[in-house]
Image (cartoon, rainbow, N blue to C red; front, side, top):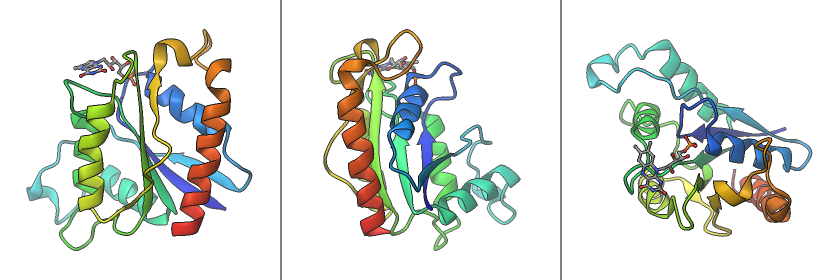
Length: 178
Ligand code: FNR
């Protein structure tokens, strides 16, 4: 079984990014599964690194046992959300014990704007490269949540083929690079 740790950068119950993640999940090939990281964490504080909070330990373990990582990010004010940065900072620590190093990874995002999340994704790419992750460059996903989801929150017919191809390509990338 190939396991992918999924970071959805929104805590919102009806998050479009969560729906995008679930849409990708439904198109994964057999033998590949998603595990969703809980990003509802305390704020990062270096004073608490000696004894990591239990939820942070769980996050690090989830990433470490995963074969790859998928970041699914909203765009907030042309950046990516603090919730996501907070989780990444925790899982990158303590120094020398980052959970991310060497992991194959990809970044996608959903917003209601045409090229929404492009700046959030670009900023996140820089962070992922610094963390020594192996990033998939193509295909990119700038998912339009207004036109790409149906009334039930599933991937709309106009986008199913694209998301299917994405899920297959990403699964292959993880398997080739883990
Ligand atoms: C936004 N939104 C937004 N959208 C965008 O394309 N570029 C942006 O810079 C911003 N900025 C922004 C800031 C803040 C604080 C909020 C709350 C929202 C809109 C955003 O893309 C939209 O609310 C998404 O639906 C958020 O993702 P989830 O929660 O649906 O996954």
